[in-house]
Amino acid sequence: MSDTDIAIENLIKWEMKTMDVKTKKFTPKKKDNWVHRWLVTNGGGSEYTVAMKEDGSFGCSCPQWKFRREECKHIKKINENLFLNLLTETIDLNS
Image (cartoon, rainbow, N blue to C red):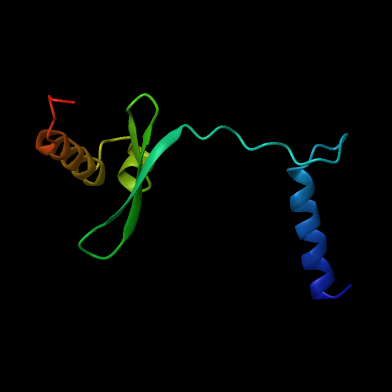
């Protein structure tokens, strides 16, 4: 068996794991609870994704949140910007 054949066989095995064995159809993806996403770049150039769930809770792809589940500076920055945007929104009372 060539390397290409092995790679194709491994790919087929991987795809079969996501397929319903009885119906031979792919199973639907789980519902994504994250309703908003922001890309945050830190001073060193690393990029992290901050996301907000339907219930208003946040998560981040940085190590501090992933491993410790502590609010990180990326989440704080997004919260700060969201709050400032709310404060600066103008409301037209005539409409």
